[in-house]
Amino acid sequence: MPPPETMYCAQQINIPPELPDILKQFTKAAIKTQPRDVLQWATDYFSALSKDQDLPVKERLKMPVATQKTDTGLTPGLLKILHKQFAPKEIITKEELLQKWKDLCLPIEQLDTILALGNFSENINWMQFSALGCSALGGTITSALKHACEILTEDPEGGAAQIPFDTFQSLYTYLAHLDGEIPKEQIDSFLHSLEEECQGGMVQPSKFTSLHSAEKSE
Image (tube, rainbow, N blue to C red; front, side, top):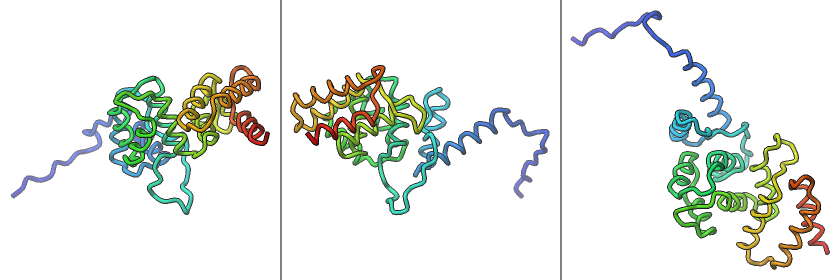
């Protein structure tokens, strides 16, 4: 005959005082991020929490468009999560990136495509990878740079999405050279004109999109 199950009364159960808040924050984070694989994401969440690292959490809940496929791959919100995790480093390893990519349940085929486009080795320049990630989101260089501003900016959401001119220059030059069809003279002319338009050394999408449109119409 099996022994009776142990019975506990409320006085015998010791609940750590921080546990309710930890579970509450975890639940809110899961709702905002909407991970496709909750268990894999939860592993990364609590691992980052225990190491005092940036958590893999979107800033706000974005409902998917009704016509959108379930497996959409990389999104601006997910790329921003990766940027928060890797921004403190200039160079990351392919192994580190692969692990964080898997934690967000992103398709490995898309990662392989971006790595191949950038001809990355084991050590990866994060800002260059991020630029190609933005390119995967936007299609054109202008769209990619707009995404980059929105991901890299320290402005509040809905603000001007400004980033330093030096950062913009580095991203634009990298993407333009990879494109291979933009003459160096055109790159230099565009950057020179944009720098003159900048206020306080900061670039925002409205400035470079209008300038780019003006140059194309000439």
